[in-house]
Amino acid sequence: MYQNLKVAVLIAAAGSGKRMGSGLSKQYRSLGGMPILSRAVMAFDRHPLVDSIYIIGRKDELDYCQSEMVEPYGFSKVRSLVEGGKERQDSVRNGLTALEDEALVLIHDGARPFVTEDVITETIRKAAERGAAIAAVPSKDTIKVAATESATEGEPPVRYFTETPDRSTLYQIQTPQGFRREIIEEAFAKAASENFYGTDDAVLVERTDKKVYFVMGDYKNIKITTAEDMETGLAILRMMGGPTEERKEEEAVEYRMGTGYDVHRLVEDRRLILGGVDIPWEKGLLGHSDADVLVHAVMDALLGAAALRDIGYHFPDSDERYRGADSLKLLEEVIGLLHDNGFIPVNVDATVIAQRPKISPYIPQMRENMARILWPQLPLDEAVRRINVKGTTTEKLGFCGRGEGIASEAVACIRTK
Image (cartoon, rainbow, N blue to C red; front, side, top):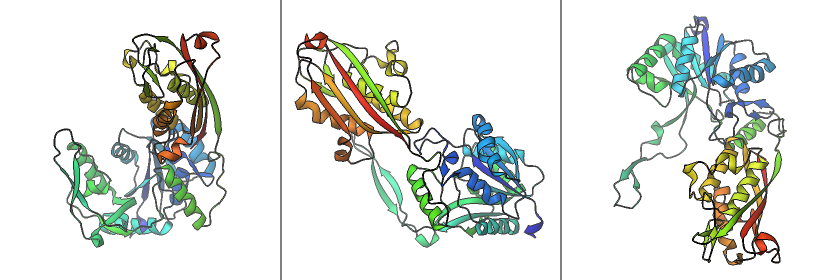
């Protein structure tokens, strides 16, 4: 029966790379020499029961998707690329609208590159027979239900567990999720009329009081969401006999260097803040923000390495939002910019140039303050080892030597993720 139905596959690929820490959308990243999305498409393009494939992507990436994800691999079943929406559910709705005369619809995540022929076949078969079927695997972990206890004023909320469901009834949901076309279209129409957004497509069908049936998935059918998932994906490729050469074009690590320099005038009635440390002294640095000359130099070095202009461009002194700003908070924004553009810091070396005061007692705290922001995922002692701060005088020469100001310079190394 199911062999006679025309089957369409909607591949949702309109997500971004935020959790991946990269400016490149996660599904376009290379995994073992082939883009993640292209691997997912290939599984369906080769499947004998699939008739057509519709890839749903971000509007500004459709041309890139066509030229880099589709054309190089000669896929024969890709009918069109569809503009995605604000949320995943909006994107899938757009994909349903683009369908032609297909009677059965599979919906699959573009970031799941390891779906097998057997899982696809069983999803098609069960959906044709029962109307709705999704791939899932039994939960390996104990799952608990949490609640929040009201906290006293000034204290953070307290979380506690209320129950532990029977693990034998719990499953981790995957894709593909397969549906008779009329069933999934009815489910999306109902959700749209009620402005309801679900965590997957099947929950929309459940809300129409129809049953969604189970198909055994595959534990290797992971969704590539974080940088750690990329490592898992490479391990899966090795298990499957795929390429073990990890340094392919987009996976090759690129290292970059950048320098930063900043100077601020010393004046009375200002705090002296260096590396986020409030140093007691008779004068402080003049500036639109807190004038932390050390952090500013580090920020400029990081931005320079990533070719992202300078701090004056991103945090202009004409913008009142940055008046008196904590420079460590601005450093957090710079790290966010680096991550958004596919970079992470490797190490930093900075020098504070001042005749007075002596900064050596404060250097350990300066390093900790910046290390927490630069490498929040690392243990603090390991992060601190990646940043060096030095102090030097100018032997009383120049504006620093005369006590008119303090300068700082920094060198930063960054790499692609």
